[in-house]
Length: 199
Image 1 (cartoon, rainbow, N blue to C red):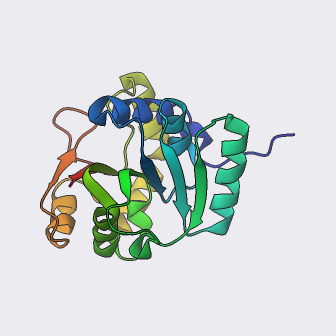
Image 2: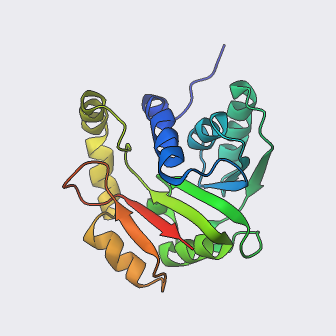
């Protein structure tokens, strides 16, 4: 019997976010880091539609174990790696990765400034990082309302722990020294929940 997995209610969203990332950045090959991968769902969905070499990165050994199981079940044929590491000390050389993705982990980093600086360090010239949280632009409004309503209490709790958006994300980025970035919103007129960094 398949054991229950965390974040199951968000499963329909990951393919949509992966498709958005592909459509926006057109990065189909090279190395991709999925930082704070958790169960690996976003990285798996991106691997399904690209030939990216995937690095599933998480500090939690149990999360990596789950990600490994999910990758095996997914049937993807991309080259994959599982790396136990803190975002503030990534074990990769400078200019290593063509694409860095991270959904939902930024709020839990012990040092968000250092984490963003590390992601920028390992990003190749011409590469892109997409870091933050949200449901993506492609999520239908009916699904968005259902998922946002379901998670409103958790989001409110995370606000106290650093659930940043809009001006607060700008303030965080101003401390990093990174200049080539923009905030990305899921919906028109909403504050940005995502950071896009380019090099």
